[in-house]
Image 1 (tube, rainbow, N blue to C red):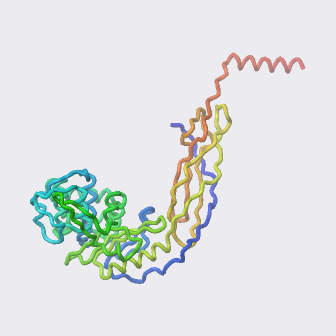
Image 2: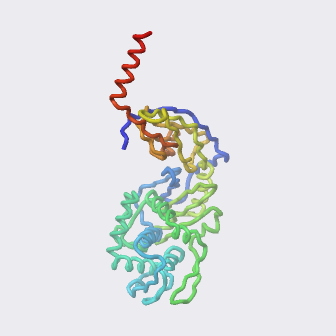
Length: 376
C-alpha cells in the first residue's frame, strides 16, 4: 500500500436541493404509546414518541424469528413439523404434528397468518428447543443494535421479560427488508402454501397493505398485555420508511399520518460527479495521473433547503508505477448535518515507472555540460 500525505481540497457547494413536495405538518399527537418513524438509509429518526420505553411487542417478534430462520435453514427444503410445535395457544396457520411443507411456506404462515405454530416449528427446526432459539434471537438483536430488547419466545407470546422498544423494532424491521424473500412475503396480501401437498391460500393480517398504497409490510401483533403493535414499511419514489409502534390505539391511522409526513420531508436525489483533478506522479513516464469515480447511488435528503457540499481528499503526489483502478483518494458528499455519501477516487490510467538512468550516464552528461560551458 502506497504511503501518502493527505491533503483536503476542493470543497464547494454542488447544489441546494429544495424538496419537490411541500412538507406536511408534523403530527401533533399519535395514539400509540411508543412510536418511531425511521429512515433506514441514513439511520435518521424523523419522528419519535417514547421511543425507548421497554414494552411487550407481541407477534412483531416474528420478524426476528423469520430473520433467524432464513439464516439457518434452506428456505426451499422440505421439513416435518415437530409435534411439540403445535402445542401452543393463540393465532395459528393450522399445523399438526407430522405435517410436511417447505421452510418458505412455514415463513409465509409465520408472517401472514401470524402462526404461533409456525414460529415454534421454525425455532425447533433451527435450534432443537425454544430456549436455545431465544439465545440466537438475542445474539442477533445485539448485532442489529437493539440495545433494549430481550427475546424469550419465538412467537411473541408474553413470557418472562420478553420486551423491546419502538426504536429497536424499527431497526429489526429495516433488517427484514434487506432479505428479499422476507420483504416479498411481508408485502404479499395473500400467499398459497402447500401442506402435505394440499394447496392452502393464507391472507395477511396487515390491513395497512390495503389501506395505504405505498405500504410494503411488515408485521402486526397483539396480546392483552402488549396492546396493538405494528411494524410497517412503505416505499415511494425511491424512499423507504419504517414505522414501529407499541401499545397503539388507532395504529393504522397513526402509521398513515406519519408516512404522509415522512414522505413530504424526505426525497431521493442523484448526486452528480464533479470535474475531478489529476494528481502529480513522481518517477513516472507521465507527470500526472487522471482520476475517475463511480457515481454514488441516490441518497435521501430532508428539510426544505439542504445544501449538498462536495469535497475530495487527495495526496499531493504519488509514486510510479500507478496501476489503472488503483485507489488514490476519496470523494465525499456532505450536508451541514452529516456525511451522506463517500466514493473512492481511483487512477483512470496506468503510469509506468520511468527507467532509472545509470550512474555512469549521469556523469557523462555532467561532463558534456561542463565541456560545453568551457568551450563557449
